[in-house]
Image (cartoon, rainbow, N blue to C red; front, top):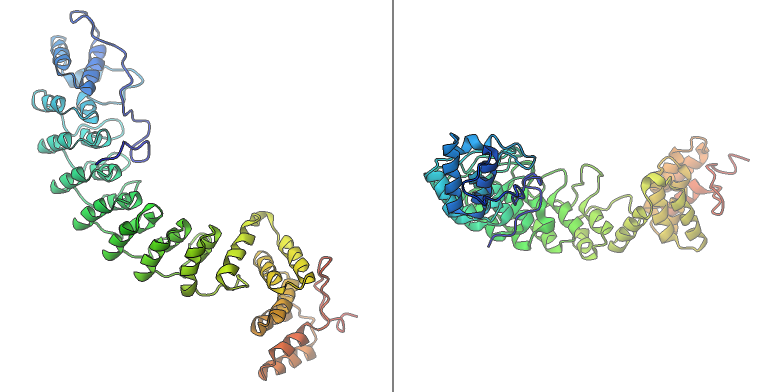
Length: 442
């Protein structure tokens, strides 16, 4: 069953689904009216399906020496967008009027209005009338004629979820993969979650990897079955600057995530705009179940101090608590200092990591994070940060650096960190200093 007409998107929203003008009525059949008014009344009669009125108006136009097409050109009203009586009859699903206009008046079945839309497209957009669609196709309407935005009748059938019409169009050699501003018909069907339409299009060899908009990127609105169909048709599960897995993670669709991973989706491909991987999108939206599913297949991120499902979500909360362009890292550093004062080293570690991400040139942040890692028992991370701090402090004594290197060789990592950090002046109540060892700076 077809859905209601779309309010916008597939066709220009300015196109009238109902003829609001003209307000004229033919009260006196013998009254003399301008050709433009007769033409406007003809449009009204076509839309309403009033065959007797339409025939009367055609006779009067002929008496005035005008054909239907010639009469339409005389309409100058602002509401008129180039539509003829066949467009209006098709829009409202009036089969009898369409038949009369095509057979008796020989109107062009492919005539386009100002935006390139044909009677066939309007038949689908309006009432999704299979009868009118079939009539137009039987009289050689072009199933592939697109509007100016690239939309074809098949795009509209997919939008309306008009299965019978889509099947009819495809049987009349409609191209299955046309690209418009809205993507392909397969993409639209995926976005609408229409499994039946997806099956029909795939059966007619629709390409699930069609460039511009791949159907898998529409998964935020699709059902699991709608996701499975393109993957079974060998759709590229890692396509696009924003992968289907990122879209699924952002939407919180655990089932779709599992389906994509099973089909070979890579959980470590970042989006090309912000460099974030799927688990970060899931964490930002607080989709705990999605984070749980993605965690085992995601490579640990250095910027997340506590690499656990809880730690990832906490990291995302901190990052979203204040816009990054308003945060120079000092807020996170101050909060980390406060956590150190409470001996909450795990939380301080996360906060200093946030601060480092925003201000990677502040050497004291690496020193503080090293001390937190040491307290947390992660000697390897503590040593890494201590070495970074050392490299950022050229005035650090050579003897201390050599001593630390010797301890590393015998795997005494905790003592090596202590040597590197000994004498570091870190004031956790005031702004920390970048001064190094007190013996080097008396």
